[in-house]
Length: 147
Length: 276
Image: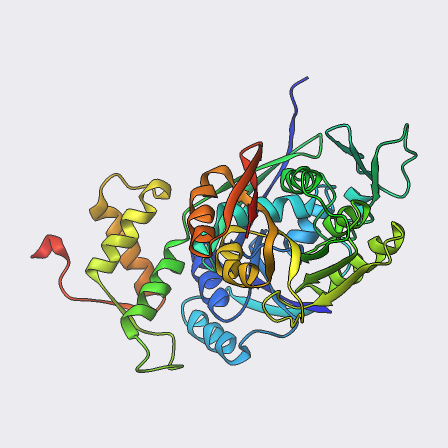
């Protein structure tokens, strides 16, 4: 008999840092899944994205087994990382508000393309720039399509 | 031991941004709930001032934003699985079972584990790969280190294989307590447990065998320490990584003059036996 899907869980966990603490522990444990098994697998698969927040979608089956898919980091996470690089260490602990360049926007847009509802890099870039502005982060310079 | 939970109710389009900003302020992991998400931080290890600043900035974008805080006590969330787990047999040689299982027959080696949310029950391929590797290494009268011991299952196996003394280290306090419980459950009086990182320990004498089932990054970082704390001719047994990571591990071990002896594989995971 084919196993049936009994539920989904949507988590965001830092790469390489899954542990049985909440939310992972209670969310998986209450469904009778082996938490430690999930943590070992997640950490091994995200070694190269250590510390970066990654969305993970877990599918739970009726035999208490599970599968999971790791998505690209949310655009907002990539924007914050980029803004920190841009700011450097000259202004530590000032408000998070900062700036990123159009080159950085392009890199983020390309990273996010597999998960975004956009066919062209240009439209993905506009979405990323919009997210950045909502976060209080300005995009400096001229967009490539206006050059 | 507790965690701080922040419950955020917000419009869906702000969810990812708030997760990103709160992760930056010290919250480690998040779960989606109706109309928002929950985030968790270890103890009170988050930047309260930064969180307040985030609340201010986003409340200027929407009125539908609330932050609520409470504490969640740490408990054994793995209890449901642990109360009904199946025993594991490795190569018809080693049985790993819970205290509530009645063994059907005798095996050369039998290990009883009550995991209490620590890693190492034989259900994950890496534990089986480590035990398989251990079965091929002479443990008689040997001084052994178990780096990142979890339930201390590998220490118990080392003891059963005849090791004279075993030192088990784990940064997680729960694992140190649980490792001690499992050592007693298996009548292994020669296992000593230490809380902390492997690198943070002071050992006067080198080891004959070092066991480390951790992950690729930690193994790469600690390879120099392992090599430096092994006796010449001693064995290093590693796992916690995929087949595809083996070239990186071997390249790093070669830098410290560790010689490759054996490789075991199961379900795309691998273990290695190296010699100094």
